Length: 176
Length: 156
Image (cartoon, rainbow over all chains, first blue to last red; front, side):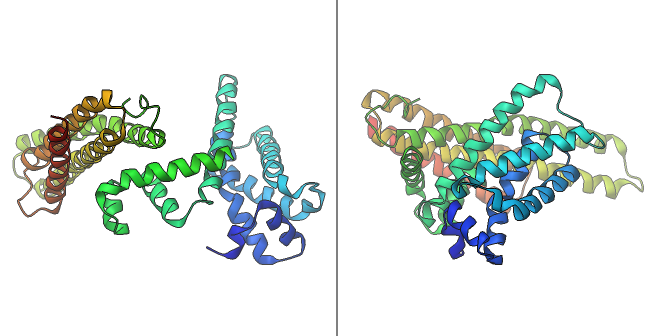
């Protein structure tokens, strides 16, 4: 983990404004999955179009960061930018199939899920390394308790309790 | 259910979340198991009806790959059975006493599932005794059985 990973969104934006190239890399790294999820899950863009929007989003973030009034609001700003560019892409209508009318409500649920998933993801980064590792292995990589136990050298009988404790900390973090 | 009904237990939500995750993994595996086995069975029938010709070796290879795939699914089911039984043990230790017997029942069912899955890996697919997949399936079966036995003994 680099020292930039521990910065808040606002601090990272300030480093970008100061012209730190490493900060720009960290910013793209931090928000790349988010942008891609909005393109693919929210707007159902095909891969090629999602990549075009992705490039366009970060080009605009780079050129228009000075317009951002509240550095802490960079995430919603990027989300808004991504949505607008996705809509532009659909309007051009060259390769992609726009989401049918009946899917609009579903898409709005998808956006809420994306927001929630990224809020959880951000909260997970505040937990200790062991918690992050265990939660990632169990919930994201679908690993069994035995596999987690063997790979992290933790007694198998304690994995479920450890996960439960980590989830309690995560809930406290999200509620804070 | 055991965790959700234990209101006084701070980490009940974390146990319930794990139970839901295991449940979500199990449902598609049940479908995949049936599909993989049907697929392997069809290949076995075709191989039996085809006789020996130039395509025999290719068919044997394809059949072997289908059987390999059919072995992977019960192997995962056995591992899920072990995890579910282990989770039931943790739930039973900390839950509201009124639900302890339900946790034990869940562990016993999970152990049964792990045993059945290990049996499928061994007998139906004809894997050899030294096969690493069989060793893993048996390991899961044993872990699930031990967890269930421990829990049932504790509540008697």
